[in-house]
Image (cartoon, rainbow, N blue to C red):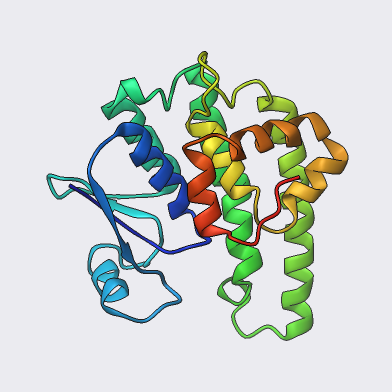
Length: 210
């Protein structure tokens, strides 16, 4: 059985979706770097950064980094079609989100990690500039990867799942709705997928899908 360390409103949602697509047994341990408890203590023992999602495979291997986990599951369970489509561009897109979008969100959420003892004004300046970069990165993503979010059978692939999840933070959907409306509609198609929708609803019960 797979063990997934994570919590609601976090990147663990995309791994939950992927595991369901793979039709494998798994369970989630409530854990994160900002929560105390047995699950978070267990997470720290296998991933000292306490980053989520962290996935432990049935044979005990520890996987971190959302893109790496999605790629692993896609390769391990090809019938799940997580990497179905133009695999070269799917892999490129997964790493693009990790490098340009996910990393920016980490700076926005924790500016003190990067500035040390800087005052609040300096932290606010870093957050503001990083958010501008994040939004621009999403607009570029929309231009580069708009046709890469779905399998040939029209189910969301790993890239579609990751894009729909990570774009839920820091007003990215609003920006995309204004500057890349066609792409924003594609993300809403991912949201509405019968496997994706219940997971997103559990993670973000107040989210309004237009």
